[in-house]
Every structure is written in C-alpha cells, then in structure tokens.
Image 1 (cartoon, rainbow, N blue to C red):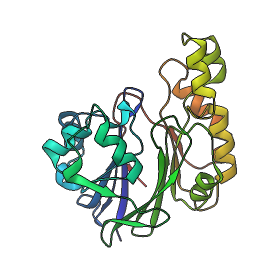
Image 2: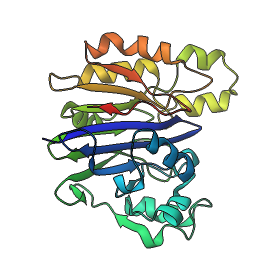
Image 3: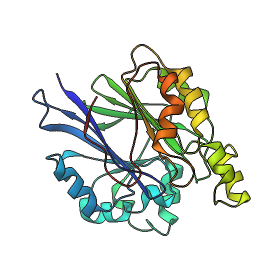
Image 4: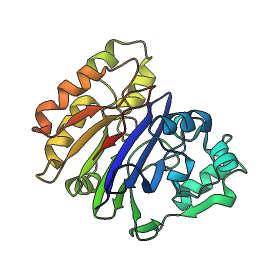
Length: 268
C-alpha cells in the first residue's frame, strides 16, 4: 500500500508552492507526485526537495490555482528549467499567456483541465478536479486531488466559502484551507481602508473565524488532517489561526503552514 506525503515550501503573500505525492511501502521512494502553484524559485524548490531526499523527477506536473504573482512568480522558470506539464483551466491558461510573469513561456507545457470531470494528471495514480472559488484574480480554483484512493483538497485565496468547496472538503482525507487574517488585527493594522475592504469583501481572503466556521461545517469522521494556509504576515499569527480553529477541528490534527519557510514532509 502506498503512503501519501505532503509538504509546503511557502504559504503566504511571499510565495505559494506545495507538493503532494505517493510513496512506496517503505515510505522512501516517491512513485508519483505533483506540485501545486509555483511561487518559489526552482533553485529553492530543488534545495527543499533535497532536504527530504527528493528531486525534480519526483513530481510530474504543476497545477495552478490562479494568476496572482505569489502563486506563479516562478512558473516561467519552472517551464524553462524543469519542463513539466502545467495544468490549469482554459480561462486561466488564457490569462497566463498574457501575464507579464508567464507570457510566452507556458505554451509548450499547457494542459487544459476539463470542467466537471476528473483529469488524469498521472494516469492510474493521480487525478484532479477543480472547483471555482471567489477571489479577485482572472479565475481562481481549488482542487480535489485523488492519489490512488486518498482524497486531498486544497482551497487557498478564497474570499468566501462556497457550498461546492464545502462538499469537496466533506469527502476529503486531508484539507488545506486558507486562514488569512484576524479581523481585529486587520482593522487596527497598517493596511489602508481600501485594501482592508478588498481583503474582507468576499473576493479577497478568508478570515480566521470564517475558516473555523468552514471546518466546523465540513469536518467528518474520515478527515485525518487539516492544514491552515496563506496566513497574513501583518494581520495574523500562527497562534491566533490555530487557536481559532482548534475547537472546530474536534481533535483532528491541525497545523498552520509556515509563511516563508518549508514545512516538514508530512505523512498523511
């Protein structure tokens, strides 16, 4: 039986990039893996993978959630130096073809996600299905990823929870969910009023209380892990985010992901 492992390389406005993969029974050899978003450099990605005995050959594709810079900053470099397929919706690929960070660089690696269907990313091992979430990018998606029979769901940069996102989380073995800001820290912090309004306006980011409410709603007996992602540097702390969602998690292991450093390689 394969083992599923997950690692965050960075999670926040400084950059976002995650790895999820299937490993052999000895838990050492990666059999199939994918990267979600490309907000860290290939050099840093290589270094962090090597820390856990991994390399670029241990993932076969990149899935993109949206076209904000902290999620695609290094996608052009990934295409040039790592040469892996880039999976995204048709609308998002259209936006990437025009974006100053990726213009003219992703075309040779373009893979279109079919709407309302499972897409075979690594045939027979890893499939992905996207769902739209509200955020002020060209298009923003969350992912349900099926690794053999293990279901992993990630929803980052989500301005408001949707019923579709909740339904996917209700089926998941592991959920990665945004817990971006503490409302009081945002109100009293350094951000101007227009930026505050953008963050909490339904197409910005999910607050700690909103994240906690979502966890309470989608929590189920089969859920094994919850990770809190995309914490704000100025309007949140890992302690606040953790404390807000701890009761909602109901004893399910809960962990905030580091903003600027890599997480451990979690066994899921």
